[in-house]
Length: 200
Image 1 (spheres, helix red, strand yellow):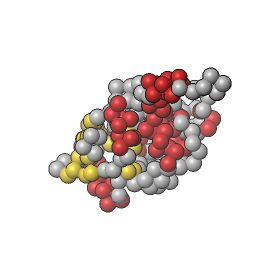
Image 2: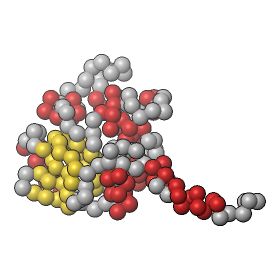
Image 3: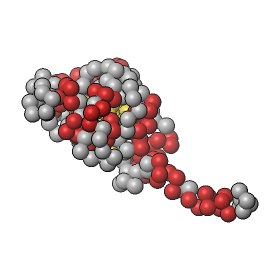
C-alpha cells in the first residue's frame, strides 16, 4: 500500500499526439523484469533516443527539451495507452517521474493499470486539453494543480473539472492496489469461509 494520492502540483510536458500505444511507451525488448523500477530510462525509447544503446538523445522530442525537464505531469491526446495490456507502461511512466497523465481519452486496460499503480489518469475534453497545451506552450514553467478529492485541474485562474469513478478515486486516495482492495475485505472473506461446509 502506498501513501495515496490527494493533491499534486507540478510542471507539465506536452506530448501532443494521439493513439500513443504501450509499445511506444515501453518497447517489448525492455520487458525483462518483474519489479516496478528501472523502466524510466527506456520510456518512449524509439522517440527519445537516436541510437539503439540509448546514448544519444533526440533533441526534438518533448521529454528531452530543457524546458520540460523535471515535469511530473504528462499531457497527451486521445486513446493514450492503446495496444497491449502490459503493466510495464505505467511502471515506466511513474519510474521516469510522472505522477499524473492528462489526456483526451485512455485505453481501458491502461487506465486500470494506472489506477492500480497510483498513477492518476485524467481524461478531459479536447477543448480543455487545448487550454492546458496552450498554457504550457506559453510558459513551460507554469504549474498545474491537481486536486483529486475536488476533481479539479487548475492552471492560472482557470479551474477544470474532471470525472473519475468513485471507486477509482477512493482507491487512489487510500493508496490501494488490487491486493490492497482485497485485504480491506479480509474480515468478510474470513467470515464467509467459516460459514461454508467443510466438504466445500
